[in-house]
Amino acid sequence: MMYLPHELIQLIIDELQSDKTALRSSSLVCHSWAAYAQRCLFSYICLAPSLFGLSPNPGPSLLTRFHNITATAPHLLCYVRILEFDPTNDSVQYLFSDSTSLEELRMVNFVGDMSKAEDVITAVLSLPSVTRLTVREGPCYPAQIVPFLRHCPQLRSLTMSRIMIDGLADAHATDKAIQLCTLAASRLTPEILADLAENVVDATQLRSFSAQFHPFFYDQRRIERSVPIVQNILKAIEGTLENLTLDICLSQPLPKLIDFSRLRSWDLYIPTPKLTAEKPYATAEATLNWLLSSLESLEASSLEYVTIQKLPITETCVQLASRVDGNLSKLRNIRQVFVMLCDAPKASAPAKDLFPLLHKRNLLTQYSRTPSLVDRVMEASE
Image (cartoon, rainbow, N blue to C red):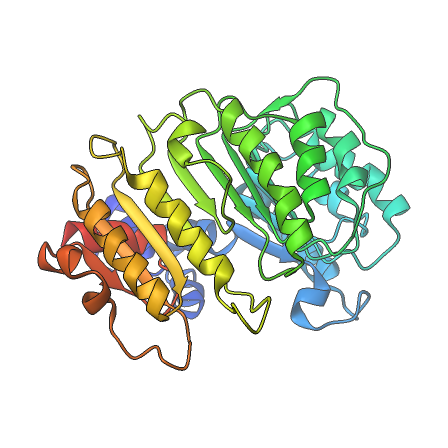
């Protein structure tokens, strides 16, 4: 059999990371191939049955099958970097209680009794290697998770998403605010975000911040309550912010809230709730006006990537987009602007007609889906 250097095997496996079938076949080639393939196959493990449309206790369960595999090959547990699980299943803590490689936890789909999850959450959050936590898709109060965060002072990234609870239980402050590098809040009520900012996290060193409230609710009063909360978080950041994602219009131009010296990426989702029949796109127009006011004095900023999502094609929005085009084209460091048009009935004009200056400089990319960070880098490098 022909011998291949380990470096070459690693490159081959890296090219197959998104192809699970090919990885499984590669793991059967020989021992050296198996080690590299298994690292990819087991780097992400999902032990949340409801994500697969399964009942909470199917037979044999996902956990039972995973336990049987790792019982015969315990080294596979060392390959797990990301664990997605339902914390109401207490078997998880026994599998990963001694893990030194687990880096990210994703708590999802709480289908059981939360009182049974306390030991599980405490055990996994206490692992010193865990630096990223996501809590989403379940009837769990974030206030129920907050007390456990004191077990994870090394946490650097926190994401809270799609937690369908209105209002909070009594706030629980941690012993010491957790200094995060990344904070992402998606489809949460403003009160939940306020509780996180006031009682849980230290936002002064945030490098990435995302706050998205649409389309979870179109209640304008809730949107208005979220504005001062987001602004307070932005004001607390001490010049470290590099990536920002928002889908609300703030009451002040962005340069008055943050230090733009390090901001490289700004994603702005244009909210398009049809609040009134008279002015169906009033919120979108207000957001574009806010964008314009924020761009007025940023010619020398470090901003490289701008994404404008769900831009509606109305007469007023088209006029505002033309002015945005002029301001963005003046940015010295801009590398790419990504635009996704709203699926409005009159959305026939391509983005290049709305942003001719950017298009002329080959800085414009129109998307029909949300561009990822990889998309941005690849587009900018071509």
